[in-house]
Image 1: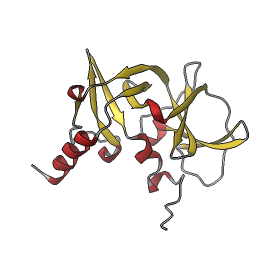
Image 2 (image 1 turned 180 degrees about the vertical axis):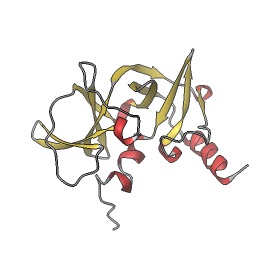
Image 3 (image 1 turned 135 degrees about the vertical axis):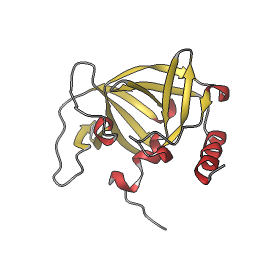
Image 4 (image 1 turned 120 degrees about the vertical axis):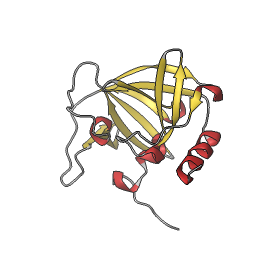
Length: 165
């Protein structure tokens, strides 16, 4: 077994199995832990910030808090981005930091058992597999389970500084 395969098996063993909010990006369905979701809002105009990566759309004022908004379609390099009436922003609360992600649409909340979560194969190229928990299977659906906290707090996102105490 290669080191990356071993790491993935450990990730799966450690994966929190529970309720996931499912959403759509392009033709794929993704899932994030429901406990990380603060609210779901329709997509609205954002204030652009100069010199930020393309996938950071800008910020919104959410009841007095300035919230950065990331378009996951752009972050995952999923092609053309088209905003329509189904486009939504999922507001996340990650370790006390509030931020939003733009997705094509929200599907539902599902409960996954450990037997329904499989390791991610090494051939997924659009997203670094270190940000994935695994692949969830529900009936004939396959969900890409994202470790949203690890993704949103990664250095390449440029949203949160790593502060060493």
